[in-house]
Each structure stands twice: as structure tokens, then as C-alpha cells.
Amino acid sequence: MLGKVLGTAAGLALGGPLGAIIGVALGHGVDKRRQKNKKIENPTYAIPHQSQNIETAFAVAFVTLAAKLSKADGQVTRDEIATLKRVLTIEKNAEADIRAIFNAAKADADGFEPYARQIASIVNFDSTMLEQILAGLVQIAAADQVFHTGEQKFINEVAKEFGFTPSQRQRIEHTYLGNLKTDAGDPYEILGVSSHASKEEIRAAYIKIIKDFHPDRLASKGLPEEFRDLGAKKTSEANVAYDRIKKERAWS
Image (cartoon, rainbow, N blue to C red; front, side, top):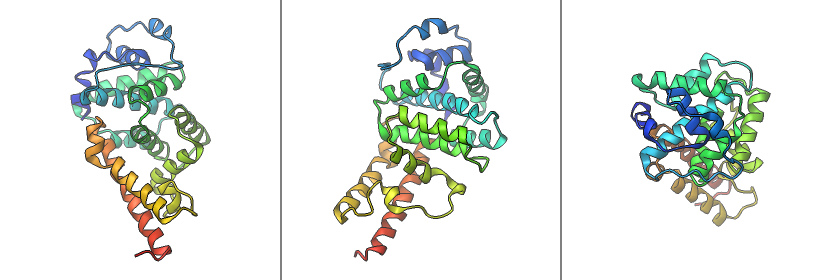
């Protein structure tokens, strides 16, 4: 996927911190000092809402945040790199570009906040799309079977920049932690409802997840294919959770 996406990066009028990273990584001579002079507290970076452009911005943002995450525990492990490659299918002709973007972001002295804010703005704070970025970062953080304190703090702060509450962030973590999970998880937490919720509330929450994370819906938003796979995991977890609740409450 990324071979095709990055082929358009040079001509993408992205601007802002992500545009600067692309320019530095791919040698387009972007003046980072000029980029830093732009206000980033409430960014309104606009790009044409075409799926290819959204895919590019989404992929570059994810690689950039993954690079920043790699600094959280002081080292980049092979497992983390392997997970990054699994979350994003990197075509052979794009490997050098991805490596350059990763290294440029890792070496950049700026924090992660400007990049998180920019991608959140680009996707209009769409919680479904932002959850997929957070999910990918959680999987990378847990790739070495240890969720380090620094990584946890990083995930917490990214979630905050994306507009997620602590309980929403915790639900996302529990959904995507994979092998670190010791049980099937709290079905109510997975669906984002209280254990005292009514049948109607639980069903509505379940249907919303199935609808929001359906592959066709994610594709229509310009979400890269690999992140649509994470969406499939989300709906699978929701199906299991809903079935558990129905069984516990003896619903027909």
C-alpha cells in the first residue's frame, strides 16, 4: 500500500509539521523554521479530501508517531519494527522512504503533540479513524510483551490530544493489547457501556461499533487497508462481547 501512497507525497499540499517531516525525509528542502512559526495549538490544516491524500497523511502521521513512541522506552526493538511493518504493509519500493520518515521524526527535537494535533485536524477529529492510529501504536508498544511506563504515558498523551477520555483510552488499549491480555476482557468496557446499561443501550452501542468500523465505511473515509484490518478486530471483539452479555443476561 505505502508504495502507492508515498508516490503522491511529494505533490501533497500537506503543510504543517507532517509536511515538514516529509520534506526533510524525502529531501524536498522544506524550511522547518518556517513551519515552526505557524501556530499549532488549534490547527486547521486543510488538504483535498480525496482518499489518496487522506491515506498519505494518515500513513505519514502513523509512522511519525511510531517513531516518537520508539523514544519513549529509550530503544527500538526488532519486535516493534516488525509490528510497524505488519500494521502498515510497506512495499519494497517504499521501504527507504518509510525508513527516512521514521528516522527524521525520531531525530526531530519536537515533541509528538504537533503531529497528533495535525492528523486529528485533518480527519476532523473522527474518533473512528483516530482510534485506529492509537490501536496501531498500542500494538507497537506491546510488541516486546512489555508495556513500559514511558510507552503508557506516551499513549495516554496521544489519546488526550485525539480527544479520548481516560476510560475510552483504556477501552482501546484493552481491545488491542493482543498477547498481553490475560482474559477475554470486560464485555461492557469493550462496548463502551456501563454494566448497568439497559438492553436497548447495549444493543445501540454494539450496532454503532459494527456500523462505524465496517470495512466499507472505513474505506470510504480514506483509511489505509491495514487499518481497516484493525477495524475488523474491533468488530470481532464487539461480537464476542455482545454474545457474552446476551448469554449472561439470558437474552433471546
